[in-house]
Amino acid sequence: AAETLRSSHKLIELGRLSASIAHEINNPLSSITNLLFLLRQEPGLSPLATGYLDLIESEMDRVISISKQTLSFSRESSTPDHVSLVELVEEVLFLYRHRVEQKHLEVRREYLPVEAVWGNPGELRQVLSNLIVNAIDASRQGGRLQIRIRKAANGRGDSGIRVTVADTGTGIPPEVLRRLGEPFFTTKGQQGTGLGLWVTRAIVERHGGELRLRSRWGGRRHGTVFSLFLPLAAPVGGASSGPMLVSSASKS
Ligand code: ADP
Image (cartoon, rainbow, N blue to C red):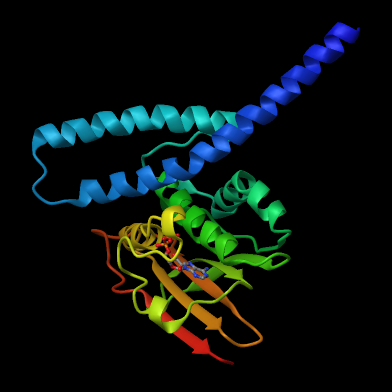
């Protein structure tokens, strides 16, 4: 009996170890996914280069699926599908639960009943992952992370789903706000790539959606709210929503 106990302890240890390795691997994987997306958008790629990209992507898929299996992630396909945003948000929160715990963040979920949206599950997960990770990064110890999902309409009256990710973090100062759309702009040094929002915006536009943000900084109440709108109907010919809409308040 002692022997089985010891080996089951070893299994638990092994499980913890592989989960923490998978967790460490997830950050660079996320960067590579962002970079691959950008590389594919480059005009004038030769067929050979595109072929190499296909190979890299299928190899990446294997690495990602191994890492996700370790973290008990559900399987995903890269073809458009009905996507439950609640499920994606929960998957991302599960993946980053250790960071949430480390910062003792209070996570508030407000999910109203919503339909599935039509989109690319992997890309939409990347969007939610970029927004949620940014919110966690900006948060201070004991901060609050609020995620709301509800039915909404955009300015043109299209019906869709709105996801808001709000943090009580540092807020975004004007000099950062001005440069927010730029690729490779980061305030996180070696820890950041500055590609998260750039890629997020591209994916949101491809889905005919909208991304807005509001930020307060410098005052007693500070923090940032990213608001993502995704239409229920598939966009015709990849509708563009134009530049990211930004509003901010400082020293409030
Ligand atoms: P990265 O996270 O790699 O820096 P992003 O494009 O995702 O790249 O973000 C760019 C910058 O925008 C960040 O470095 C940070 O300064 C700022 N930022 C993004 N989201 C938030 C947020 N929720 N609160 C404060 N700053 C943010």
